[in-house]
Length: 598
Image (tube, rainbow, N blue to C red; front, side, top):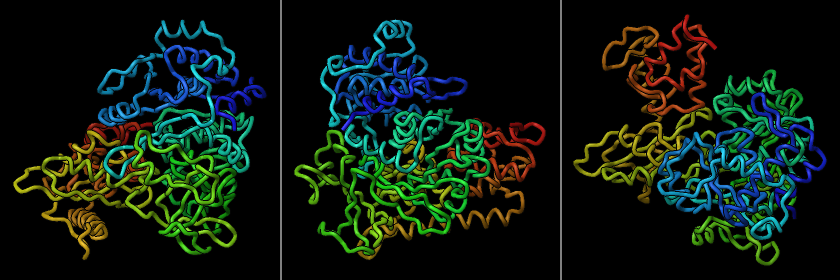
């Protein structure tokens, strides 16, 4: 059972002169990437990095990020990815919880971690000189602070927590070889291919992307975040870089035009339920796969495909080294065709949740069909096995949802809202379609509390990443409950739908301009922008001084807004205008016909 450094070095031995990373105009070969990672790994070892020691990594996408991740693994450490876009409070929690021995960052990026952490600034002249002077050959256990085995940590990825606290999933090297074998048997990347690095490094899906490339001999295509936005930016990136393999969530596939991209290539849908409509759009002229599996099982567990239009959508079968058990509430196998809970077992099962033994014990259970000491992960997903062995996902059995492909525990969002001193009870639901899915929150407040929905949304944004912040927060005297006293989430969803429908009716009554109730907006372009934002976000009374993202917009909806503005104004609308405009009035000025470009 090899470790990731061993898998990578075996590729270098046979494909050293092949391109490994493509970033802008830069082309880094496998031999160069390996040498740079080896030198940096020795510097990390000198700083105390070794097996089972987390190393926080905060770098933008690029070849230097790939060098650092490989160096951490070669040194024997486990990388802890820190997304600079996350709120400082969340980053501080992750660092305090994981206790990394080192933070690796560039000089231009200094994340606020709340407490000092030893640092290695990779582009500091002193660090560069020290690293350049070190040997470039592969490390052995004699070079490390202790021997590295497959049972040691590979990375720690933080996921949403149902108790209100993010939890670190501790993943080892043990499942990496099986994952690579599954990629070779299905996606079949190799020398000459180009694999898109789409996922943020803060998510385990990023490891799928770069392992599909760097552990197969293919080239990893890296691009800035703004060039990966679903829709026209992603389409242009796929085409410009002649990408042959891409793994994308359904929300990204749903708003991106398949015409002219990945011709004869391979696309995989993962992160959320795939639909027949997506297969019908993306499968023709390509090989289409559907993947399934949580962070707790080394990126994934099963894969289906190639899937053809018109075929039933399944999550496929477990790949080599993995098993899926369909069990009832007493952990007994259920017959084929009968729904049960999916329990995931095999080499890829994570060690557990970092320093959370109680939570680990509740989700990682003894595997009754495995060897002594083996465990299975209780996924919380429900599904069944067909007679032909294919697995079918049915639903979630708890309050976990997916927003734009991101895993969200509603309990964590509710806990953050309830932490506000004015909030008595909070509940969160999902509203909108696949591309426009967003969170809507409902709260009751303590008597006499003078708090507004926007203020509570700002309170949530102080600690939660963008995809977990509710697009709207509604105040009610009391929340609806079911007959057994639980919050009636179905009733809340109906309230959210009714609110959006009422907002649409008000805009229709106001006329084509969608005039807000607060007074006339005289500029016709501003009226159009406000109307379209109100329709897309389901928000009434949108004003020119509002901010699209503070109203609940996100990257996918930004793409939708740009498209609607192009249609309405007959002018090109650059995506950067949507993201950089502080107000809708600024956006209107930027996209005014005759001024917009690109």
